[in-house]
Length: 437
Image 1 (cartoon, helix red, strand yellow):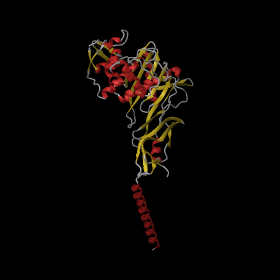
Image 2 (image 1 turned 135 degrees about the vertical axis):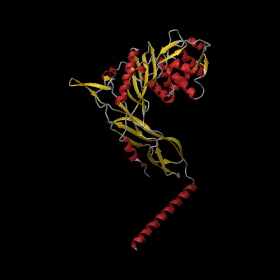
Image 3 (image 1 turned 180 degrees about the vertical axis):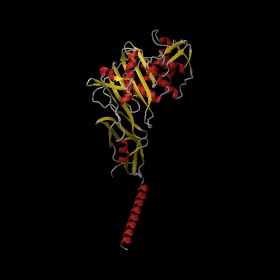
Image 4 (image 1 turned 30 degrees about the vertical axis):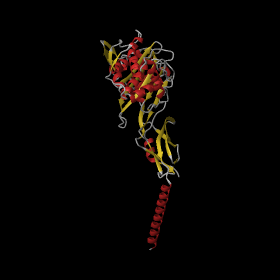
Protein backbone atom coordinates (compact mmCIF):
# COMPACT_ATOMS: atom_id res chain seq x y z
CA UNK A 1 0.00 0.00 0.00
CA UNK A 2 1.47 3.35 -1.01
CA UNK A 3 1.55 6.43 1.21
CA UNK A 4 -0.85 9.16 0.21
CA UNK A 5 0.99 12.48 0.29
CA UNK A 6 -0.92 15.68 0.18
CA UNK A 7 1.49 17.34 -2.22
CA UNK A 8 -0.91 19.90 -3.64
CA UNK A 9 -1.61 21.70 -0.38
CA UNK A 10 1.96 21.51 0.85
CA UNK A 11 3.78 22.44 -2.34
CA UNK A 12 1.43 25.30 -3.19
CA UNK A 13 2.45 26.83 0.12
CA UNK A 14 6.15 25.95 -0.04
CA UNK A 15 6.93 27.16 -3.52
CA UNK A 16 5.50 30.57 -2.75
CA UNK A 17 7.24 31.22 0.60
CA UNK A 18 10.38 29.85 2.25
CA UNK A 19 13.81 30.97 3.51
CA UNK A 20 17.20 30.78 5.54
CA UNK A 21 20.75 29.26 6.31
CA UNK A 22 24.13 30.94 7.01
CA UNK A 23 22.48 33.67 5.07
CA UNK A 24 24.60 36.79 4.87
CA UNK A 25 28.26 36.55 3.94
CA UNK A 26 29.65 39.41 6.04
CA UNK A 27 33.40 40.00 5.79
CA UNK A 28 34.85 39.25 9.27
CA UNK A 29 37.56 41.90 8.86
CA UNK A 30 34.86 44.56 8.48
CA UNK A 31 33.41 43.79 11.93
CA UNK A 32 35.47 45.20 14.79
CA UNK A 33 34.80 42.39 17.26
CA UNK A 34 36.69 39.21 18.12
CA UNK A 35 33.57 37.06 17.82
CA UNK A 36 29.95 37.76 16.91
CA UNK A 37 26.69 36.20 15.77
CA UNK A 38 23.24 37.18 14.46
CA UNK A 39 20.50 34.72 15.45
CA UNK A 40 16.83 34.61 14.48
CA UNK A 41 15.02 33.06 17.48
CA UNK A 42 11.80 32.43 15.52
CA UNK A 43 13.47 30.08 13.04
CA UNK A 44 16.50 29.24 15.20
CA UNK A 45 18.76 29.98 12.24
CA UNK A 46 22.11 31.74 12.24
CA UNK A 47 22.04 34.67 9.84
CA UNK A 48 25.78 35.37 10.06
CA UNK A 49 28.63 34.70 12.48
CA UNK A 50 32.39 34.77 13.05
CA UNK A 51 34.28 32.79 15.70
CA UNK A 52 30.92 32.31 17.41
CA UNK A 53 31.90 29.00 19.03
CA UNK A 54 35.24 30.25 20.39
CA UNK A 55 35.35 30.22 24.20
CA UNK A 56 35.73 33.70 25.66
CA UNK A 57 35.13 35.48 28.95
CA UNK A 58 31.44 36.54 28.96
CA UNK A 59 31.87 39.06 31.80
CA UNK A 60 28.51 40.38 33.04
CA UNK A 61 26.55 38.78 30.22
CA UNK A 62 26.73 35.87 32.72
CA UNK A 63 23.99 37.62 34.68
CA UNK A 64 21.50 36.80 31.91
CA UNK A 65 21.62 33.21 33.21
CA UNK A 66 21.05 34.36 36.80
CA UNK A 67 18.02 36.39 35.75
CA UNK A 68 16.74 33.57 33.52
CA UNK A 69 16.79 31.13 36.45
CA UNK A 70 15.25 33.66 38.85
CA UNK A 71 12.40 34.42 36.45
CA UNK A 72 11.80 30.70 35.90
CA UNK A 73 11.54 30.32 39.68
CA UNK A 74 8.98 33.14 39.77
CA UNK A 75 7.01 31.48 36.95
CA UNK A 76 7.06 28.19 38.89
CA UNK A 77 5.73 29.91 42.03
CA UNK A 78 8.85 29.20 44.12
CA UNK A 79 9.83 32.87 44.17
CA UNK A 80 7.93 36.16 44.08
CA UNK A 81 8.96 39.55 42.73
CA UNK A 82 7.49 41.10 45.88
CA UNK A 83 9.36 38.80 48.27
CA UNK A 84 11.59 40.70 50.69
CA UNK A 85 15.04 39.15 51.13
CA UNK A 86 17.46 39.85 53.96
CA UNK A 87 20.97 40.29 52.59
CA UNK A 88 23.47 37.89 54.13
CA UNK A 89 27.28 38.07 54.56
CA UNK A 90 27.55 36.63 51.03
CA UNK A 91 27.45 40.26 49.80
CA UNK A 92 30.84 40.80 51.48
CA UNK A 93 32.43 38.49 48.89
CA UNK A 94 31.95 41.24 46.30
CA UNK A 95 35.15 43.28 45.95
CA UNK A 96 35.26 47.08 46.13
CA UNK A 97 36.04 47.50 42.43
CA UNK A 98 33.11 45.36 41.22
CA UNK A 99 29.74 46.72 40.07
CA UNK A 100 27.32 46.53 43.00
CA UNK A 101 24.28 47.92 44.80
CA UNK A 102 26.38 48.23 47.98
CA UNK A 103 24.15 45.88 49.97
CA UNK A 104 24.98 45.33 53.61
CA UNK A 105 24.29 42.15 55.63
CA UNK A 106 20.88 42.47 57.27
CA UNK A 107 19.60 44.93 54.66
CA UNK A 108 16.09 44.28 53.32
CA UNK A 109 15.52 44.26 49.57
CA UNK A 110 12.84 42.88 47.22
CA UNK A 111 13.42 40.35 44.46
CA UNK A 112 12.13 42.96 41.99
CA UNK A 113 14.82 45.43 43.12
CA UNK A 114 17.47 42.71 42.92
CA UNK A 115 16.48 41.88 39.34
CA UNK A 116 16.65 45.54 38.32
CA UNK A 117 20.00 45.90 40.06
CA UNK A 118 21.25 42.72 38.40
CA UNK A 119 20.23 43.66 34.85
CA UNK A 120 20.47 47.47 34.79
CA UNK A 121 23.24 48.14 37.34
CA UNK A 122 24.99 44.81 36.62
CA UNK A 123 25.34 44.45 40.38
CA UNK A 124 27.46 41.52 41.54
CA UNK A 125 25.97 41.60 45.05
CA UNK A 126 22.52 41.21 43.49
CA UNK A 127 23.80 38.15 41.61
CA UNK A 128 25.16 36.35 44.70
CA UNK A 129 22.10 37.30 46.79
CA UNK A 130 19.69 35.82 44.24
CA UNK A 131 21.92 32.77 43.84
CA UNK A 132 21.92 32.07 47.57
CA UNK A 133 18.16 32.64 47.91
CA UNK A 134 17.28 30.31 45.01
CA UNK A 135 19.65 27.40 45.66
CA UNK A 136 20.68 27.83 49.29
CA UNK A 137 24.31 28.56 48.44
CA UNK A 138 26.36 29.98 45.60
CA UNK A 139 28.06 26.61 44.79
CA UNK A 140 24.65 24.92 44.53
CA UNK A 141 23.42 27.72 42.26
CA UNK A 142 26.46 27.28 40.00
CA UNK A 143 25.41 23.66 39.49
CA UNK A 144 21.98 24.93 38.47
CA UNK A 145 23.54 27.44 36.05
CA UNK A 146 25.61 24.76 34.35
CA UNK A 147 22.64 22.36 34.21
CA UNK A 148 20.53 25.04 32.52
CA UNK A 149 23.37 25.72 30.07
CA UNK A 150 23.49 22.03 29.11
CA UNK A 151 19.71 21.96 28.66
CA UNK A 152 19.90 24.96 26.31
CA UNK A 153 22.67 23.36 24.23
CA UNK A 154 25.37 25.80 25.38
CA UNK A 155 28.24 23.44 24.58
CA UNK A 156 31.04 26.00 24.95
CA UNK A 157 30.03 27.42 28.33
CA UNK A 158 31.00 26.79 31.94
CA UNK A 159 30.05 29.05 34.82
CA UNK A 160 32.24 29.33 37.93
CA UNK A 161 30.58 32.38 39.50
CA UNK A 162 27.17 34.04 39.08
CA UNK A 163 28.50 37.55 38.45
CA UNK A 164 30.86 37.07 35.50
CA UNK A 165 34.12 37.71 37.35
CA UNK A 166 37.09 36.57 35.24
CA UNK A 167 38.21 33.05 36.16
CA UNK A 168 40.10 30.42 34.08
CA UNK A 169 37.15 28.00 34.05
CA UNK A 170 34.45 30.63 33.56
CA UNK A 171 33.75 30.96 29.86
CA UNK A 172 31.10 31.05 27.15
CA UNK A 173 30.83 31.92 23.45
CA UNK A 174 28.89 34.30 21.25
CA UNK A 175 26.77 31.39 19.97
CA UNK A 176 25.98 30.19 23.49
CA UNK A 177 25.08 33.68 24.68
CA UNK A 178 22.74 33.99 21.69
CA UNK A 179 21.10 30.68 22.68
CA UNK A 180 20.66 32.04 26.21
CA UNK A 181 19.20 35.24 24.79
CA UNK A 182 16.80 33.16 22.70
CA UNK A 183 15.65 31.28 25.81
CA UNK A 184 15.25 34.50 27.77
CA UNK A 185 13.10 36.20 25.12
CA UNK A 186 10.91 33.13 24.54
CA UNK A 187 10.57 31.59 28.01
CA UNK A 188 11.11 34.52 30.40
CA UNK A 189 10.09 37.64 28.42
CA UNK A 190 9.61 39.53 31.71
CA UNK A 191 13.40 39.98 31.55
CA UNK A 192 12.82 42.61 28.86
CA UNK A 193 10.86 44.73 31.35
CA UNK A 194 14.16 45.27 33.15
CA UNK A 195 16.61 45.34 30.25
CA UNK A 196 14.69 48.15 28.50
CA UNK A 197 14.91 50.40 31.59
CA UNK A 198 17.08 53.47 30.79
CA UNK A 199 18.22 53.76 34.41
CA UNK A 200 17.71 52.43 37.93
CA UNK A 201 17.94 54.17 41.28
CA UNK A 202 18.55 52.29 44.54
CA UNK A 203 19.41 53.70 47.96
CA UNK A 204 20.32 57.11 46.49
CA UNK A 205 22.62 55.52 43.91
CA UNK A 206 21.64 56.36 40.32
CA UNK A 207 22.83 54.19 37.44
CA UNK A 208 22.23 54.66 33.71
CA UNK A 209 21.87 51.60 31.50
CA UNK A 210 25.15 50.80 29.76
CA UNK A 211 23.37 49.47 26.64
CA UNK A 212 23.80 52.59 24.54
CA UNK A 213 21.66 51.23 21.68
CA UNK A 214 18.58 51.76 23.84
CA UNK A 215 18.96 55.47 23.13
CA UNK A 216 19.50 54.99 19.39
CA UNK A 217 16.77 52.56 18.44
CA UNK A 218 13.26 52.41 19.99
CA UNK A 219 12.82 48.81 18.81
CA UNK A 220 15.69 47.65 21.06
CA UNK A 221 14.66 46.22 24.43
CA UNK A 222 17.69 44.27 25.70
CA UNK A 223 19.66 42.30 26.61
CA UNK A 224 22.93 42.71 28.58
CA UNK A 225 26.32 44.38 28.45
CA UNK A 226 29.55 43.02 29.89
CA UNK A 227 33.09 44.25 30.41
CA UNK A 228 36.29 43.10 32.02
CA UNK A 229 39.88 43.66 30.89
CA UNK A 230 40.11 39.99 29.93
CA UNK A 231 36.80 39.97 28.04
CA UNK A 232 36.85 43.35 26.38
CA UNK A 233 33.49 45.00 25.72
CA UNK A 234 30.63 42.55 25.14
CA UNK A 235 26.98 43.10 24.26
CA UNK A 236 23.98 40.84 23.80
CA UNK A 237 21.46 42.92 21.87
CA UNK A 238 17.87 42.24 20.88
CA UNK A 239 15.02 44.13 19.24
CA UNK A 240 11.51 43.48 17.96
CA UNK A 241 10.11 45.20 14.91
CA UNK A 242 6.76 45.04 13.11
CA UNK A 243 6.53 43.23 9.78
CA UNK A 244 4.19 43.47 6.81
CA UNK A 245 3.16 39.84 7.28
CA UNK A 246 -0.10 39.39 9.26
CA UNK A 247 0.91 35.80 10.10
CA UNK A 248 3.99 37.17 11.91
CA UNK A 249 3.22 40.70 13.09
CA UNK A 250 6.52 41.10 14.97
CA UNK A 251 10.02 39.86 14.35
CA UNK A 252 12.79 39.53 16.93
CA UNK A 253 16.52 39.24 16.27
CA UNK A 254 19.45 38.65 18.63
CA UNK A 255 23.02 39.89 18.10
CA UNK A 256 25.99 39.09 20.33
CA UNK A 257 29.36 40.82 19.96
CA UNK A 258 32.36 39.91 22.12
CA UNK A 259 35.78 41.49 22.46
CA UNK A 260 35.17 44.97 21.04
CA UNK A 261 37.42 47.93 21.90
CA UNK A 262 35.08 50.16 23.89
CA UNK A 263 31.47 50.71 24.93
CA UNK A 264 30.71 52.95 21.95
CA UNK A 265 32.17 50.47 19.46
CA UNK A 266 30.21 47.49 20.83
CA UNK A 267 26.98 49.50 20.51
CA UNK A 268 27.83 50.69 16.98
CA UNK A 269 28.83 47.23 15.68
CA UNK A 270 25.94 45.36 17.30
CA UNK A 271 23.41 47.91 16.02
CA UNK A 272 24.78 47.75 12.46
CA UNK A 273 24.62 43.94 12.44
CA UNK A 274 21.09 44.01 13.85
CA UNK A 275 19.76 46.57 11.37
CA UNK A 276 21.48 44.93 8.40
CA UNK A 277 19.87 41.59 9.26
CA UNK A 278 16.42 43.13 9.53
CA UNK A 279 16.73 44.75 6.10
CA UNK A 280 18.36 41.92 4.15
CA UNK A 281 16.60 38.84 5.60
CA UNK A 282 12.95 37.89 6.04
CA UNK A 283 10.98 35.34 8.06
CA UNK A 284 8.28 33.32 6.33
CA UNK A 285 5.77 30.69 7.42
CA UNK A 286 6.48 27.56 5.36
CA UNK A 287 4.05 25.28 7.17
CA UNK A 288 0.86 26.57 8.74
CA UNK A 289 -0.54 25.43 12.06
CA UNK A 290 -2.27 22.02 11.78
CA UNK A 291 -1.13 21.73 8.16
CA UNK A 292 -1.85 18.25 6.74
CA UNK A 293 1.34 17.02 5.11
CA UNK A 294 0.85 13.28 4.50
CA UNK A 295 -1.24 10.23 5.31
CA UNK A 296 0.65 7.03 6.12
CA UNK A 297 -0.97 3.59 5.76
CA UNK A 298 -1.42 1.66 9.03
CA UNK A 299 -1.06 -2.12 9.27
CA UNK A 300 -2.76 -4.35 11.86
CA UNK A 301 -5.10 -1.66 13.18
CA UNK A 302 -8.65 -0.48 12.67
CA UNK A 303 -7.08 2.89 11.81
CA UNK A 304 -6.25 2.64 8.13
CA UNK A 305 -4.41 5.95 7.57
CA UNK A 306 -2.39 8.08 10.02
CA UNK A 307 -2.46 11.84 9.40
CA UNK A 308 0.89 13.66 9.57
CA UNK A 309 0.33 17.29 10.48
CA UNK A 310 2.09 20.12 12.26
CA UNK A 311 1.51 21.10 15.88
CA UNK A 312 2.61 24.71 15.26
CA UNK A 313 3.65 26.97 12.37
CA UNK A 314 7.14 26.31 10.97
CA UNK A 315 9.23 29.39 10.16
CA UNK A 316 12.26 29.79 7.92
CA UNK A 317 14.46 32.83 7.34
CA UNK A 318 15.55 33.75 3.81
CA UNK A 319 18.13 36.11 2.41
CA UNK A 320 17.10 39.30 0.62
CA UNK A 321 20.67 40.11 -0.44
CA UNK A 322 20.96 39.64 -4.18
CA UNK A 323 24.66 40.31 -4.79
CA UNK A 324 27.36 37.62 -4.92
CA UNK A 325 29.90 39.95 -3.29
CA UNK A 326 30.66 39.57 0.43
CA UNK A 327 29.19 42.30 2.61
CA UNK A 328 31.52 44.96 4.00
CA UNK A 329 29.79 46.07 7.21
CA UNK A 330 31.43 49.48 6.97
CA UNK A 331 29.54 50.00 3.68
CA UNK A 332 26.18 49.67 5.44
CA UNK A 333 24.47 53.03 5.83
CA UNK A 334 22.28 52.65 8.90
CA UNK A 335 20.46 55.93 8.22
CA UNK A 336 19.31 54.85 4.74
CA UNK A 337 19.25 51.15 5.71
CA UNK A 338 21.15 50.15 2.60
CA UNK A 339 24.46 48.55 1.68
CA UNK A 340 26.32 51.04 -0.49
CA UNK A 341 28.56 49.86 -3.32
CA UNK A 342 30.71 51.61 -5.91
CA UNK A 343 30.00 50.82 -9.58
CA UNK A 344 32.09 52.62 -12.22
CA UNK A 345 33.00 55.26 -9.68
CA UNK A 346 29.40 55.90 -8.68
CA UNK A 347 28.08 54.96 -5.23
CA UNK A 348 24.79 53.04 -5.45
CA UNK A 349 22.53 51.35 -2.93
CA UNK A 350 21.80 47.64 -3.06
CA UNK A 351 18.07 47.27 -2.51
CA UNK A 352 16.75 44.15 -0.75
CA UNK A 353 15.09 41.52 -2.95
CA UNK A 354 11.31 41.36 -3.10
CA UNK A 355 11.15 37.56 -3.63
CA UNK A 356 13.10 34.78 -1.96
CA UNK A 357 12.66 32.15 -4.71
CA UNK A 358 12.87 29.17 -2.38
CA UNK A 359 11.80 25.56 -2.83
CA UNK A 360 11.44 22.42 -0.75
CA UNK A 361 11.96 18.69 -0.82
CA UNK A 362 9.62 16.48 1.24
CA UNK A 363 10.95 13.14 2.44
CA UNK A 364 8.89 10.44 4.18
CA UNK A 365 10.90 8.82 6.96
CA UNK A 366 8.23 6.10 7.35
CA UNK A 367 6.41 4.46 4.44
CA UNK A 368 3.90 2.70 6.70
CA UNK A 369 3.12 2.24 10.38
CA UNK A 370 2.64 -1.19 11.95
CA UNK A 371 0.46 -1.44 15.07
CA UNK A 372 0.86 -1.48 17.99
CA UNK A 373 2.80 1.80 18.27
CA UNK A 374 3.29 4.18 21.19
CA UNK A 375 6.28 6.42 20.59
CA UNK A 376 7.44 9.82 19.37
CA UNK A 377 8.53 9.48 15.75
CA UNK A 378 10.18 11.64 13.09
CA UNK A 379 7.71 11.00 10.29
CA UNK A 380 8.64 13.59 7.65
CA UNK A 381 11.68 15.75 6.85
CA UNK A 382 11.15 18.93 4.85
CA UNK A 383 14.33 20.45 3.39
CA UNK A 384 14.05 24.12 2.47
CA UNK A 385 16.40 25.52 -0.19
CA UNK A 386 17.27 28.94 -1.53
CA UNK A 387 19.52 29.14 -4.61
CA UNK A 388 20.30 25.42 -4.21
CA UNK A 389 21.60 26.04 -0.68
CA UNK A 390 19.98 24.16 2.19
CA UNK A 391 18.50 26.73 4.53
CA UNK A 392 16.86 24.46 7.06
CA UNK A 393 15.75 20.87 7.58
CA UNK A 394 12.38 20.79 9.32
CA UNK A 395 11.56 17.57 11.14
CA UNK A 396 7.87 16.78 11.57
CA UNK A 397 7.74 14.86 14.84
CA UNK A 398 4.53 13.37 16.24
CA UNK A 399 3.50 11.28 19.21
CA UNK A 400 2.15 8.16 17.51
CA UNK A 401 -0.33 6.07 19.51
CA UNK A 402 -1.95 3.29 17.49
CA UNK A 403 -3.55 0.21 19.05
CA UNK A 404 -3.45 -3.18 17.39
CA UNK A 405 -6.76 -4.51 16.06
CA UNK A 406 -8.27 -7.41 18.05
CA UNK A 407 -9.46 -10.65 16.47
CA UNK A 408 -13.05 -9.43 16.82
CA UNK A 409 -12.10 -6.12 15.12
CA UNK A 410 -10.61 -8.06 12.22
CA UNK A 411 -13.71 -10.26 11.84
CA UNK A 412 -15.98 -7.20 11.82
CA UNK A 413 -13.71 -5.50 9.31
CA UNK A 414 -13.76 -8.62 7.08
CA UNK A 415 -17.59 -8.74 7.15
CA UNK A 416 -17.78 -5.02 6.50
CA UNK A 417 -15.55 -5.32 3.45
CA UNK A 418 -17.45 -8.40 2.22
CA UNK A 419 -20.79 -6.61 2.52
CA UNK A 420 -19.38 -3.54 0.78
CA UNK A 421 -17.97 -5.73 -2.03
CA UNK A 422 -21.27 -7.60 -2.55
CA UNK A 423 -23.23 -4.35 -2.51
CA UNK A 424 -20.99 -2.88 -5.20
CA UNK A 425 -21.40 -6.06 -7.33
CA UNK A 426 -25.19 -5.83 -7.01
CA UNK A 427 -25.14 -2.17 -8.13
CA UNK A 428 -22.99 -3.04 -11.15
CA UNK A 429 -25.29 -5.92 -12.15
CA UNK A 430 -28.31 -3.66 -11.79
CA UNK A 431 -26.76 -1.01 -14.02
CA UNK A 432 -25.83 -3.59 -16.66
CA UNK A 433 -29.35 -5.01 -16.58
CA UNK A 434 -30.83 -1.52 -17.04
CA UNK A 435 -28.53 -0.85 -19.96
CA UNK A 436 -29.52 -4.08 -21.75
CA UNK A 437 -33.22 -3.32 -21.31
